[in-house]
Length: 214
Image 1: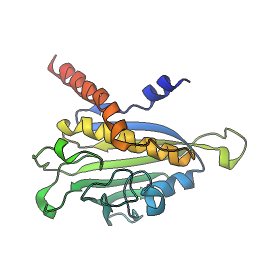
Image 2: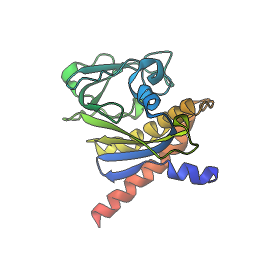
Image 3: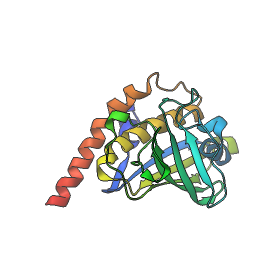
Image 4: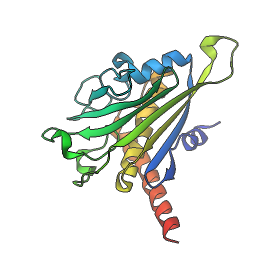
């Protein structure tokens, strides 16, 4: 598979106007992939800074304003654990809270990396939901260390006008995750990659809108 084919395969897929889904094949074991989703010493290297608890109903507050994260911006992601089954399923609500916003303002949903200027002033009446699913794949090199893991990330209940930014943000964050697990250097500039992939998600949303209108 060449680089162009790899990039096409890793693009997010719009399930409907409010849902985007990604799939990645990552190196195992699955327990390490799980640590990258839940433990701050791993999570901060590709997404946000803090632990994610393994108790349904527990609250989360993941810092975006940390020198450890790929793209440092003011604010945090707040939510509640909906479902957890280590090391296979992690689901939680997602609210992007910026400085000066009250807890009940219902900030607009989207990945941590969205620029403030690209976030709408509108407020979503519902929190969005993020679901991570991990599955061990058959052995590839005859050892547990060589076993690959399929990651499926689904972001639901996103307002349609936030889908392009959410898609580009998750796409870029997942590139950092893949680099971390594969012991490769991540992209040197987070927003450069974000801007590179954003047009694809804009076009995908426009295409879905045209299909709805026909």
